[in-house]
Image 1 (cartoon, one colour):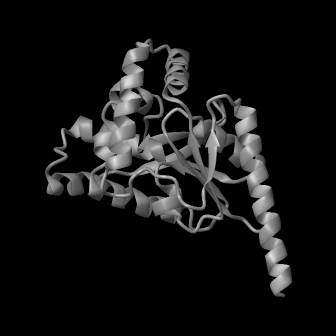
Image 2: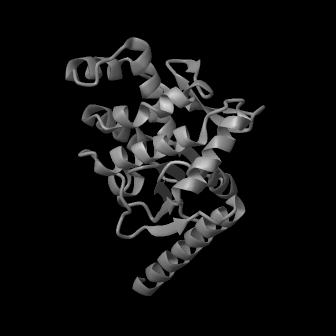
Image 3: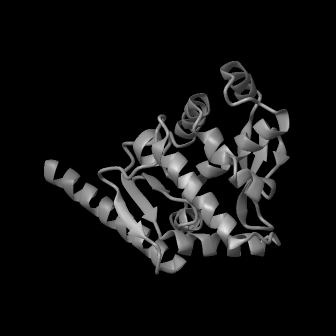
Length: 235
């Protein structure tokens, strides 16, 4: 069966990453968490005190950043490494969440990450989630999903996720962070967050993860069937 690119875009805390991981596992595809890449860049910029308004500092910093994903059999997940160091847990902390959209809006950062992501998905057979996969990274992706959910649901999900990592954060702070990130991501000049015209909208406000995964897998199956039928008809 022909391998394809599955692009899953949408707002924070809609279940994108969890859904994408499970879909990738079901199909035997690679999973690439592009949001984690921007979080890793944010961590490096904060550590090195990089000025976002200084293009030379930004370019020099990007030249010194190496981001890789390694599967951890113990945790059964891909973990993010920044310049050889495992930063998976660190990049999920709230102080990174508070800064990541401001780093992601920088033109040089987005272009560098998009280039890396396109290279990672060149051979197809990938599930990639983020903010601009179906519009900027892989506009030719065979399957595009755009995920959304009401902000209250997203805030509660994010709070639970943080609690699971023993981080106690006020719900109001999380809600404000999500709304701030939504605004920055949707209004930035370079590849803003938006639903691609040919993307399937998936509102997860009242859906379980299993239902979300089923929706994506059904969309993939119907897309592959339709593609194969079109090829046969042309043949």
